[in-house]
Image 1: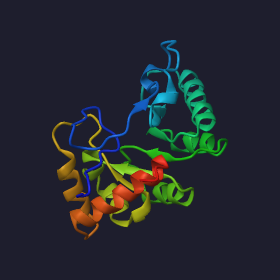
Image 2: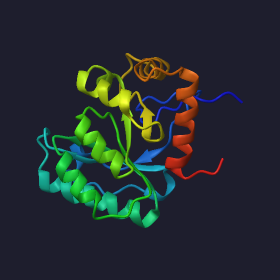
Image 3: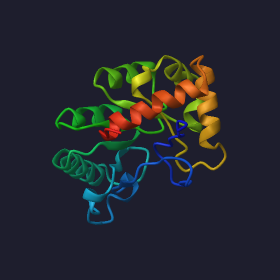
Length: 194
């Protein structure tokens, strides 16, 4: 079997690309009084997190974020994070929970922030927006191979195959080697055995 492409976070799944199922309430909707969906039937809880650039109350976002983290801990499921202008607050909340896996999706932070994530064992995922940021291209080039993912998020302008090509080029590796490593990361992140 050839190694599949994995799109760790997408709003536009394709049948030939592996993508995990996710459930949760996005920070942008955390003030709408929505109940948490059935999180026991998804692979990953999320997106969750904090977006301090949005108009949604920070208190409502924090309450929902904490509810997601409690459920992730209880169900032993990883989380996918949406983090905008809230890195310190998110990192502080994460230390209060024992989580099976943490992934910062669409990472566009600094090298220093990335190093803090790596030290904690957190995964970073990169897509088109990440590739357009000079500081994040530096993060991609130096990311530990075992904590790396690729994604398309909600972007239809750059398919996952092209994301892999661009990231492989930045890391001076082949698409095949990158795909093999991400496949291993995927199994580890979801705690699959096969």
